[in-house]
Image 1 (cartoon, helix red, strand yellow):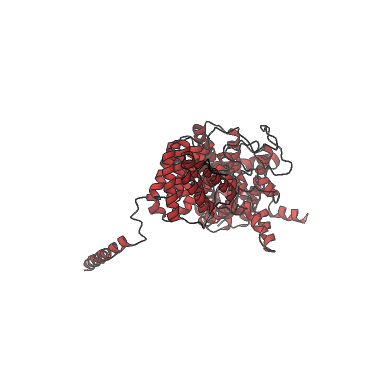
Image 2 (spheres, chains in turn cyan, green; image 1 turned 90 degrees about the vertical axis):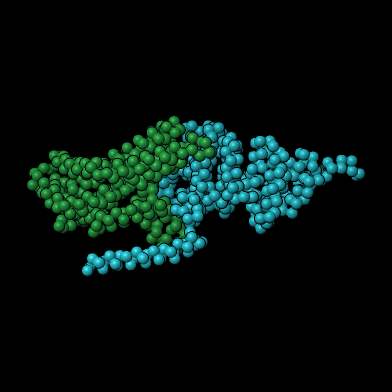
Length: 317
Length: 291
């Protein structure tokens, strides 16, 4: 009798479970939070937290660019959000605030501990003459150092060793974890084509990025640079930059400095290429659009004047 | 003077190391004590060989590192630093797990199995038991580190063709002495805390806390108001700075070796802290009822 009750109870539970499934399954399929739509294992396993990991790996690439020297959250960091590797890639190195030097040690433990981690600011591809604090009192150069104080940072000894390749795994991981971040593609593409001579890989990576973020003006601009600077295909570069400009006008505005800079870069490059192709009215049109955002209005105006003279070389004085 | 006298009455190492009734003093007493310590240490090493912790962790480390090494990013096959970093991270995690879990179970296991009584009746003093357990755990972790670092150097050399022997030796020895502090700390914890699990957890939290924050406590302190500033700065000076021994970044980014005098000072710093924790463990074990 007792056994029969158990069987009946089990049967009841099974029926209940089946009923619940028929109710829950349609709800789950239409639930916005369901991750079953994604075929990406990382996306299913990590959810939105993968963006945090992607950011971490992207910063890791910047730390590698500085050979492990990187300020922690407890140290002073530049206010600029753009990382050094990204600034070198796109925004122009001279406009980016580099990582601060560690400064004087605060106490004897601080002084002692600087021997055990990279505490000297260098960049990949630069030789290091010593492995201790350049800013400490009584600093002396290492025995291998052949540089004076003045040109100490202008090392070219390790140039050509292609150490920049060490950034690639982290950039690739960052892009895999967060494929919607255009900066990762642009940075990786810059280092691939400019320092490592991997133009095909750079172009392929940008195209991967464009599949994830179609029409992204940053990616289109970088792709145009590949066609102009590496493939020497000005016609295609002009088409791509024109597409980048159209996309920028559709999706961006002048609110942020980064967007203004991208707009200016696209216009300058388009004006240059149109000038070379002798399409001066088009070049002037781009430069006049640029006048609205550029802080260097005088030089742009001068450029416009020069191009205007090209349009009408025998204009009356 | 009074402090010295008090300490001498609490623990007299000459008497404690050479057991009462052994009739041994001076050099022969020390030799006998060393024989006891190394015998107990030998048992710990054999135990580590029998257990599968090391083998599992080593195979995992090797597999993950080799998988990473076989990956090619943008058709670039010579990237090495990410592989080295991953390998060293796994070595650090594995070595900490082995050191803490091995050290934490030594005394509680002896007590639970009731093998502590015959051990102390050998005659072996309580200080020798503690020192023997520490010596065994430390030596065992040293052997595991040797295997791990050998693997690391070989993997690095096959990728970039460099053999950073001096830097790797320094990293290995610094790592080993850091584990010495951790093992001594865990041995002390195994006499203070009720169960090995709680000891494991507390030691891991402390060690990870020091590794992550130890270097930055002074900066945090300077941003605080008094008296919190003084308290945090005092903590900064008192804690054993385990993060000093983490020279992974130097090794990964080919910064070369540390000046040998600095290396030697770091070894001395670790010895002092390990000695301090061991002394504390001996004091507590001497006063603690065995049952």
